[in-house]
Length: 248
Ligand code: NAP
View 1: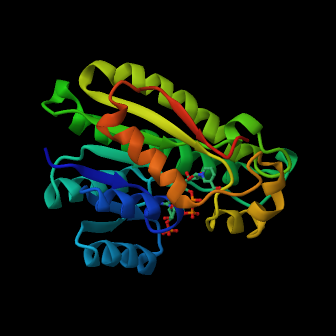
View 2: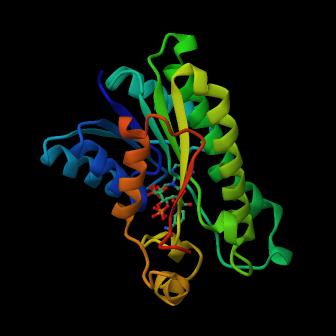
């Protein structure tokens, strides 16, 4: 069976590392991105130069029409998706809950929660044995924040990842008999650009002393856990939430 993967938010960080590793393992990969076209094209080029197959589509996961177009592009160019990584996610500047307005809350929940639901819905419609599909696997990106709560930084983001944990449990049970496994990874502090969006590019180095392993993680370390959960090696795992957080 051809293995075809969609990685949302694959232009940078954990998504880009996942796309590179997946392509090296033989998946045809489509990455989506929000607006950083040069970064997305660089990932596609790098995969192609290494002998892999990749494409990129600009698609905001929070916009239903964009999600529909993303999956239709993959249907046409690569075939029926067999693996989805719900990786696109955002956080906004550090602040306390008492300062958060509805616009911010809507943006964070739309990208992190609604985006993951919409992409999973499109994947299930294609993977489910009930719909003539031949099964597949989904990995959602949660965060250690869902356990920690992220006080004084981004409780909204942490709560969105709590929703992802519950979404993972529920969807996993809903589609388990249809050939689809649904799992999540819960990264701790990983060296990516996301911390700059919170207003603190050096956040990983500030908080790493609170990590039992006393270091931040690399995107590739998260990518390996994602690829394992998607692989046949994890054939009896569904509804699992795997911490990749150095013990924190
Ligand atoms: P990142 O470096 O900030 O990259 C974010 C990626 O998502 C980019 O490719 C970006 O596209 C894309 N994106 C953002 N909003 C989008 C939208 N609405 N629609 C489509 N794509 C969108 O992020 P990261 O640190 O790799 O994080 C990836 C995932 O891991 C997120 O779900 C995050 O919450 C989770 N996570 C990260 C950490 C960490 O410490 N880094 C820890 C726990 C969990 P553009 O390049 O076009 O902007």
